[in-house]
Image (cartoon, rainbow, N blue to C red):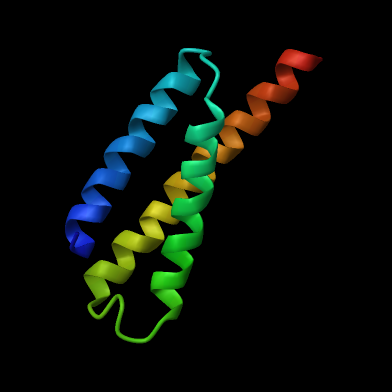
Length: 84
């Protein structure tokens, strides 16, 4: 899979995950693992020479990391607020 197709799929899945969170649905362990793996992969792609050759690719990877961080923060915040 090329980087553009990977990013398109990843953004779609992250958006779907955020929708689940906003509907107060629990995330499966597989979904949580997938989110973590995507963050790790994005960091590796950004750090390896030649993987994200163009500034547009690098920008999309950084945007993906931001989206993943937003989902993580949403989950963390709402998990804490449900406990309180």
